[in-house]
Amino acid sequence: MENKEEFRDSIATADDRGKRLWVFPKKPSGRFYEYRKYVSYVLLILLFAAPFVKINGNQFMMFNILERRFNIFGFPFWPQDFHIFVIMMVIGVVFIILFTVAFGRIFCGWFCPQTIFMEMVFRRIEYWIEGDRGKQMRLEKQKWDAEKIRKRSLKWFLFFVISFLIANVFLAYLIGSDRLIQYVTDGPLNHLSTFISLLIFTAVFYFVFAWFREQVCVIACPYGRLQGVLLDNKSIVVAYDHKRGEKEKGRAKFKKNESRVETGKGDCIDCFQCVQVCPTGIDIRNGTQLECINCTACIDACDSMMEAVDLPKGLIRYASEENIEKKAKFKFTPRLKGYSIVLGILTAVLVGMLFIRSEVEARILRLPGQLYERKADNIVSNVFTYKLVNKTTADFEDIEFRLLSHKGEIKPVKTSNITVPGQELTEGTLFIEIHTAVLEDEKEKLKIGVYSGGRLIETTSTMFMGPRSFN
Ligand code: SF4
Ligand code: SF4
Image 1 (tube, rainbow, N blue to C red):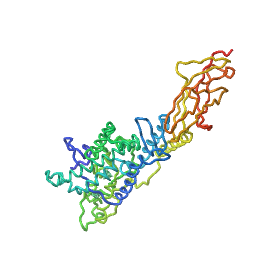
Image 2: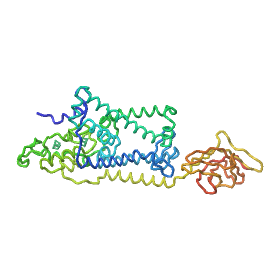
Image 3: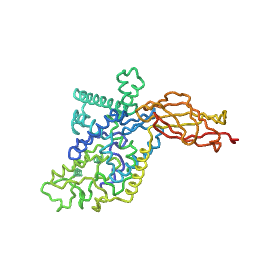
Image 4: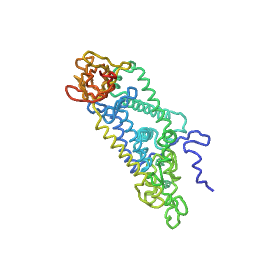
């Protein structure tokens, strides 16, 4: 008797001895594939344009890890904004969890850069050069004759060029597009270490898209691993309607003029089109599997077969297990409600933080190891260092510090035109002098306003030390 659970013992992309089984997926075609193509065009344009578009002089997207400078949707973030960055990351994770609980691995099939590049760029080049599944399999077995050498070298060359292009864009996200363009203009030899990094990135992308491919989704991606804990029988995933496909007698080959209702055979005609088209090499009829990236290729393949044999489409479709078993409609479950509330609260916190975020961040700290100095006329003086971070692209000039909480004087060491250029940091030293009559305690919290051209741009606080007794 056939063991229906046998598929659980191995993965579709490795043989009994663990050797890689190359997947030759059939070229998908159909309604969903067309939609996915349009989505991928939009995403590819966004992905390539994001580091080169600027808003108010700020790169739209930048993740400069080395210099710890990040731009998200044109908003610059400094290490001082790390809390906002963390909240954004948490929102991203909760959003993905919420989305996954409700709609399964939809992100992987429609939005993940790995799938977009693999299925919509590299795979389509492969189909263009080597042909569809059958031709690719023949070419693979073929000896290294002129045709194979020509096709393979053209394919590998184009793969390398695209990997190099992706690596450049990746670098533009990391170091900024202005610097990348500058380096290109200067010539690679003048920036050898960056050029070597670029070649390493190219090699990694080439390895992933030319060889590693679906293994990223099957064994490497941490998000893929999470499916087991996030999905439940109410999650909507790409699913095979086993009730309809198997019925009492199970799936069976199509026979002309035979009524499947009368024979009790399932609607699945066992044509294997859904398996042949699958980029991860699985059989969706075995149920939801970790390898499935919800790419919808099997939906399109099965729909076209159903159309050909005059049976209703949707044998493979977006559906939950509960929908297939009990014909239950999508429900907003308590789990989804919980995640939505958390997401709502986090988003509100983020909006609030962005709203109160200042253009300039000021930090004034007492010079370590210094106590205070008692000057003539009962004046107490403390020495401080200040750090001003300009988060905008405009310069702030004529910086002044004013004591807001106490009567006293602030005397910067640099007296004329303190400036903080756009996206830069300015540091310096200043003295604060306060009359002992104003001081109530030996340690007092001072509130200080930072002004540029007479306009208040930031307020900050610091501690001031005085003598224990003021008499
Ligand atoms: S089973 Fe279907 S949806 Fe899942 S990866 Fe394979 S073709 Fe794509
Ligand atoms: S494509 Fe549809 S009919 Fe063909 S084997 Fe798959 S599920 Fe059955």
